[in-house]
Amino acid sequence: MRLLRDSGALSRSDLARRSGLAKATVGTIIGQLQQAGAVAEGTAEASGRGRPSTPVALTGHTLAGLGIEVNVDYVATTAIDLAGRRLSFEERIINRPQMADVVRLVREEVARLEAEGITLLGLTVAVPGLIDRVRGVVVEAPNLGWTDVDLARSLREELDGRIAVAVDNDANCAARAESLHGVAAGVNDFVYLTGTVGLGAGIVHGGEVLRGSHGLAGEVGHQRLGDDSHHCACGRRGCWEAVVGLRALEHATQVPVSAGEDPVSYAERLAEIPGTYRALAGIGASLGRGVAQLAATLDPAMIVLGGSFVPIGEALVPAVEEALAASFTGRGCSVALSTLGLHAASVGAAVDALDDVYAGRRTLVA
Image 1 (spheres, rainbow, N blue to C red):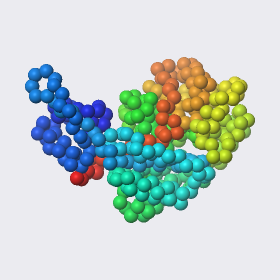
Image 2 (image 1 turned 180 degrees about the vertical axis):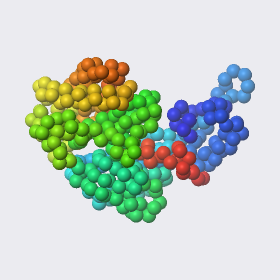
Image 3 (image 1 turned 90 degrees about the horizontal axis):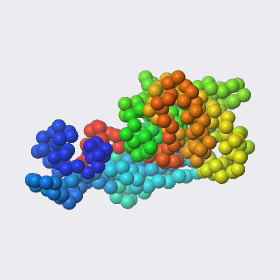
Image 4 (image 1 turned 180 degrees about the horizontal axis):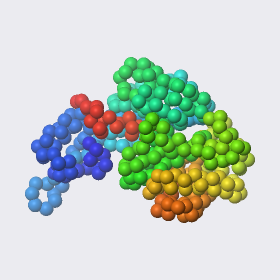
């Protein structure tokens, strides 16, 4: 299944050669996956001598993962099927959503998808903050005002344990999405920087998300890169997110966020206002300093700027590239803008929700 996901349609012979399995074994597996509705065969194609080869491709349009992103002023949901096709996306404006809001939204989305004949294989919720992934607990999400919220347990109880539930950091989820469906596809070592109210990093090393000993790797937004005049939602001063996050954009441009406006829409509006880019010079310089430190520490091949950074990338990317060029180790690191927009974290959460299937920890049944 991973070979078909990553390479597209392949013949049985190709699958046997790439997997190292016997052709008979591959044939048996394909039969089981067909019964489960996960794969389909295409039209036989002649390829020189011998019997025409029949391509096998993931289909799984009735088998899906559901991803939810919870942020300060919105909640986004994405469902993707087993072949990575997006079945649905929705953004709901909710100011400082609470756990009850998330539970209600999950209940509604699960009911809608199941009414359409979709079998959900998993659900992952992406939250901006410190996450204990093993327990599914939001340890601290300062911008949401959440502390020790046992989100996974509440959702399992709501769903009567029918669907596997996980909770992860939003930047980690966004990095997963970029590595499979975005600008960093095929890049084994990169850093994704969120651009929402806060700032976090999803660190991908060797093709896998780097989580650290306690699952807290990537909390770069609370590095001290500013001075004491910059107050952070976490209660500290001088945090990087207080210098380059959404509130810093408002302060630098003197353009307030409108009610019900998500970070990307706000940045798109900023990009249309004359003189905005000059006002963002300081933010670009601060973003560049932090990125140069990340490059010196992690040696990534690419830095991906996401969320609200994308619409104003014309003002930010040159400053980041200049900082990298002047740094000790950053010359080999490129800078790219996310192609997934506001969808990145919820798409990555949906990808994560399917991981148990691709890792063989969950068996598909006919």
